[in-house]
Amino acid sequence: MESLDLKVKNSQKFINFLQRFAPIEQTLLLELRTDKMLAKANTTIRDVVKYSCIPLEEIFEEGTVDTEIKIGIQNISKLCTAMKYFADSFTFKIFFKELNEENVATGLALKDDKLEVVLESSSMRIFTPISDETINNLTSDDLAIATFKFTKENQARLSQLLGFDSDAKEVTISLESKKGKLKACCKSFKLDIAETEGDDFVSEIGKKNYAFIDKEDAICYVKENMIVFISNESDTKTVIANPLD
Image (cartoon, rainbow, N blue to C red; front, top):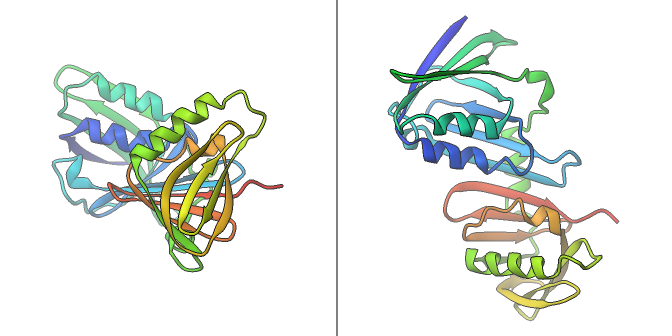
């Protein structure tokens, strides 16, 4: 068994990255590549798909690594809690072995001069891989019928109103664009949220799925059966499919 030691210099950025995926599932397939760390996840019924990537140099002292490794995180919240036990600088140790011509983590250790925390890794068998090609195809602007900019301020305002509307039976948010104006509509309110470019449209997203969007300024592509949210503040992309009838 081999191991790789990485010196963490900004644990909060590491935690923030992991927490993007926690609302979807506590397990996570983390991919360590030459100069970046990325992850992809989807809900059980695949009506939400999320991708996010961060340069290694933003988290670790090492900006590049020679060994690419797939890491199965058993519990995102537990790993984030473990990191909070340390000062901002500590060692993130990955134990790994070769499996099917890939390096796969078998365990993790977080340690400094006074403390060591050991965590098991999940088996690759529990994950359904999402290819880079799939993410690129889902999040491209090909076949988009309209686009709009969705600011985090308007996202927060919509979240507040969804709380106000929480007793309504409807489980979806209707997004209605007419003459370049986009409204988010529920039983108790209609909110202007953006100006649109392209065709008029009516689309829907589930109220629960709206919670999976990162509260960051985003450009959105409206497609026939989904909306793609591309963050302007990070390399994060979220795809939300229209609810099934």
